[in-house]
Amino acid sequence: NAGVMQNPRHLVRRRGQEARLRCSPMKGHSHVYWYRQLPEEGLKFMVYLQKENIIDESGMPKERFSAEFPKEGPSILRIQQVVRGDSAAYFCASSPRGMRDTEAFFGQGTRLTVV
Amino acid sequence: SQKIEQNSEALNIQEGKTATLTCNYTNYSPAYLQWYRQDPGRGPVFLLLIRENEKEKRKERLKVTFDTTLKQSLFHITASQPADSATYLCALDFGSGNTGKLIFGQGTTLQVKP
Image 1 (cartoon, rainbow over the protein chains, first blue to last red):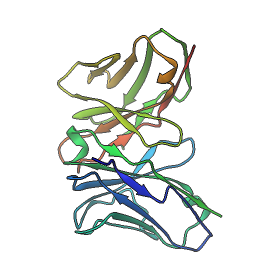
Image 2: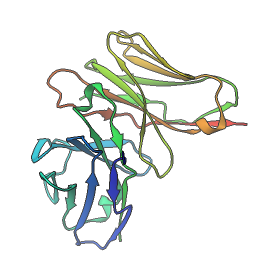
Image 3: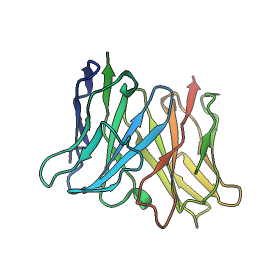
Image 4: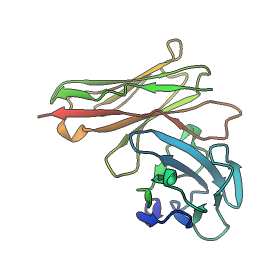
């Protein structure tokens, strides 16, 4: 059973471009979470999705950021018109049910660099 | 808002000793508390989960305690090894009404010297 797959592992974008980060959860997992980790900082919650639904997007900036988890295919975190402050590691996690009482499985992250 | 504090200073210990890491939180009491390990350039890996009605949980050389009165969890690694060197994150859920997301502390880096 493959783990959580994130791609690309590294992504370089110029200011103003769009970044698309993909996450394929573990087989059988329908809950997906996105976290952002800035250098020397902890993981910050961004958004929680179940298939085709956004459950909680309280940690996601209101502008330029969006996320989806379609019925078929990976979850996508999309950042439009990137700025230098978006440079960070973005981690996706999946679980068979909510994270509350079960372990979450994290991917290896996508490291976004905005130049 | 909820605040989680882990010792930001790195913890340096000698191989074979017990490492003890602290996680303190404020305001609401979580129903569950989890500990993760993160190596440089990698995603966090789950270690242990403890529930609010559990005082202690063990797994091999790892032990977690959960004191809801002190609002604190302690994470112990006994007979530490250089391979235990990593950043350790505590993560909390906050019970009913929460959508199931975890809030993470900033982590404590452990360095075990041979």
